[in-house]
Length: 244
Image 1 (cartoon, helix red, strand yellow):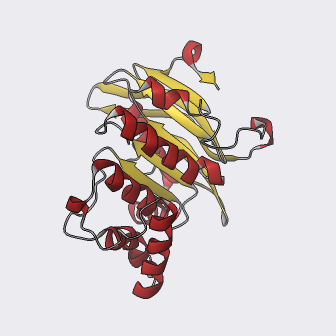
Image 2 (tube, rainbow, N blue to C red):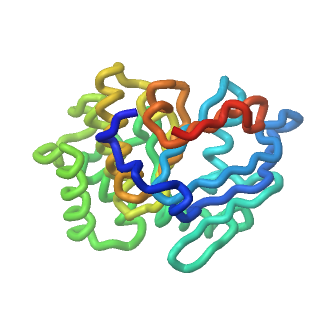
């Protein structure tokens, strides 16, 4: 673990649960993707979810993030307005939640290539009703914080893979989301760039009290998180769950 990534001096017992999933079950046809999975994510905690292909790790991320609704189980999210079950929300409520409480970073960035860096980062703010000038000021500040000052007006195709992922991290942070979900965020990068981007991601999330849930196959990524949760056949492998 890299000590410079983010602070680990706060005992986990002092942290407050941000997201608590209980008995999550989900099927794709006759295939069991999640089988009574329970998991708690604390404030400021970086949690890596690992497992073989088909183990259920991406499905778990999508359920926690309210992208898909589980067949059964609850996902209790604590917000400033109280605690609510994400799994029980209507589609419109879950969509609104993803624009306010959650941020997302994907392997390929999922950025809009025709837009500039600042326009990509501004987009979730504009969708939330923020005025364009304020949205762009926030976006420029985030880009500068992540080492992209002076690159605000470059289109995504003019950036390197590592720079593009920094734009994606800035976009995930734009709405001041409390939980960031990352699906193989370094999977398309060379090892040195991946290490740099992971450091930026950790500093921008758990390093500032936000929770990070990252699906990864990379043991180096997992080693720099606070906790590793390993899935096998849709269940958490208790023997292989470890805190750092």
